[in-house]
Image 1 (cartoon, rainbow, N blue to C red):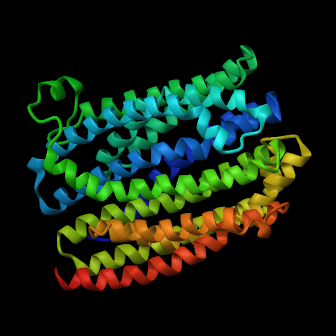
Image 2: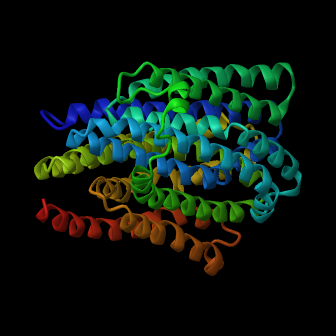
Image 3: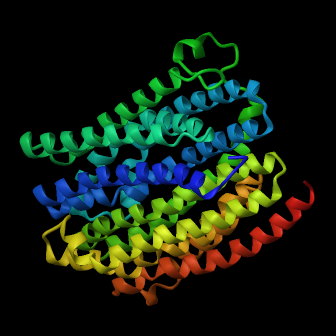
Amino acid sequence: MLHGSLADKMLLFAMPLAASMILQQIFNSADIAVIGRFESAQALAAVGSNGPTINLFVNLFVGMALGSNVLAASLIGRGEKVKIGEVVNTSMSLALISGIILLIIGLATAVPLLIFMNTPSDVMDLAVLYLRLYFLGMPFIMIYNFGGAILRSKGDSKRPLFCLTIAGIVNVILNLIFVIVFKMGVAGVAIATVISNGVSAVMILKYLAGESEPFNFTFKSWLKSKIKLNHAHLIIILKIGLPAGFQGMLFSISNICIQQAINTFGAYASAGSAAAMGFDFLTFYFVNAFTQAAVTFTSQNYAAGNVARCKRVYNLSMLLSIGFTAIACIICYVWRYELISFFTNNQEALEHGVIRMIHAVAFIWMCNLYEITGGAMRGMGSSILPAVLILLGCCAFRLVWVYLLPFMWLGNFKMLMNIYPFSWIITSCMTLSAYFYVRNKAFKNL
C-alpha cells in the first residue's frame, strides 16, 4: 500500500471486498426470494422491511470495526508492529461485548420498534418473529466483522470474501430446506441466517488462529493474555469508529422513518420496496468497498507522510468506484421489471418495487461523492466532521422530507422515493467542500 502502483492494488483490495458484500446481499436476497415465491406478500414484507431496523443497531458496532481497521493500518504504516497484537485482542474483545449487547437490545426492542415503523397489522407477528430470531446471531456477526477488519488492515480482503461465500451457500441451502421442505416460513429463513453467520464467524476465527504474530488470535491465547482490552487502543478505536458508527446508526434511523412512511402505503408497497431495497444494497456495496479502500490506503500513507500518494488514493478511489457503481445502476434501471419480478409475482408489489428502482437505485452512483470523500477524511484522522455532514444531508434532510413536508409525498410513492437523490446531492456538496479544506490543512502539517 505504501509503494509502487496504486490502481491494481486498490482493485485487488476493493473488488474482493465488494464481491464479499455483494455475495452476502445475494444470499440475504435469497431469504426474500424464497419467501416471496413460496410464502405470502405479508411474509415477504416481514423479512424485507426489517433491514433498516437491523442496521440501526449493527451499524454502530460495524463503525467501531472500521476504527480497528484504521488503527491497525496506521500502526503498519508507522512500522509499530509490536502494538498490533494488543489491537487484535482489543478488537476481538469488542466483538464479543458488542455481540452480546446487540442480542439483548434486539430481543427487548423488537416490538416497540416495529410498532413505531407503522408495520401493517397483517405483517406484525411475522416481523417480530423474524427480528428476534435474527438477533440471536449477533455475536457471530460481530466476530466476523471485527475479525475481517483486522485482516483487511493488512490488505487481505480475499479470505473474508471466502468466509462469506461459504456461509452464503449454507444460507441458501438451509433456506430451501427449511422453507420448502419443512414449511417453516419466516422462522426457517431467520434460523438459516443465524446458522450461516455462525459459519462465517468460525471461519474468520480459524484464519486468525493461523496468522503469524502479531495478527494471530485464538480464544485460548486471549484468555491467557494479560491485556484483553487495551484502554489506549480502545480510545483511539472509539474516536475513529464511533462517529462512523453513529453516522450509520442515525442513517438507519432516517431509513426507519422512511420505512414508516412506506408502510403507510400498505403491505404490497412494503413488499415491493423490500424487493428493490436489495438492489440498493448490491449497488451501494461498490461504494462501500472503495470507501474502505480509501480509508485503509489513506491511513497507511498519511501515517507515512506521503502526501502525493494520499491524493492519488482519493482520485483513484473516486474514479474506480463511480465507474463500477454507474454500471450497476444502469443494469438495475434497464432490467428493473425482470429483476423485481424475480422476488414477487404480485403486480402491485412489482410496481412499487420498480418505482424504487427508477427513483432511488438508479442514482446510487452519487453516493460516491460523499462516501469516498468521508472515507479519505477518516483515513487522515478526521472522523467527526464527515459524520456530522452526512448526518445533516442524509438524515436531518430526510426527516424534514418525511415529517415536515408530507404534502410532497403524501399519496404519492414516487415523490417519497425522491428523498434519496435529493439528499445525496445536498450531502455531496457539503462533504466535498469540507474535504478539500481538511486536506489542505492536514497536509501542511506533514
